[in-house]
Image 1 (cartoon, rainbow, N blue to C red):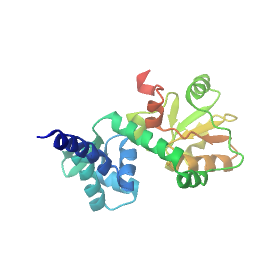
Image 2: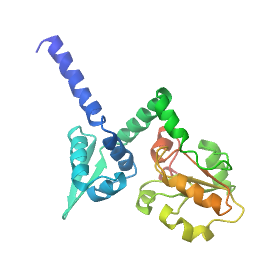
Image 3: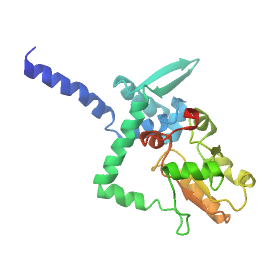
Image 4: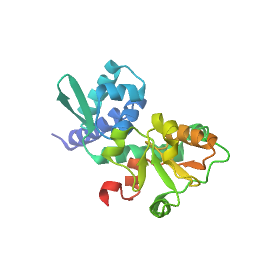
Length: 221
């Protein structure tokens, strides 16, 4: 093989990753898979597409060695092959936010409430949560919380939040998080909490973003 043919082959192989990540739905599937293993049906529901289409997208991710599958009876479950796939998604999204004005404008529409508590993040949030000065709630499904969650966070899935408001200590501000900046669950949680008179803020970071920042997760402590 000539030097040029070899060089072309090298770039072609790397381009397989870019091709697999070139679909908006496949990027969303990577984001959801960053929360842990899920069945094809769960992934289809989470991304609002048919099971058939979800399967096709997942096969593309598998072909590029970004995801892997296992069968359990009639069900097929997928997971990311490596935590670095989730990190790739976070860094790609961060670059897009920095460079694309259209994306910046779209994200401004996600502002929840004008009286929302000023958000905190990182080590400051960890310290406040450890002291009990702020209540951190994870509004993702319980299974995602069990896979990995932020230190000192309580699992109160969005679907259960209204019924479980009594579990939140009175007079304590709340910080809600879900799957990252594009996730709407934490936004809905903040709206609900604010309407109930509870000071609340959304943490844009999810588990994947938290890890990329070099911050510990609960199972790391």
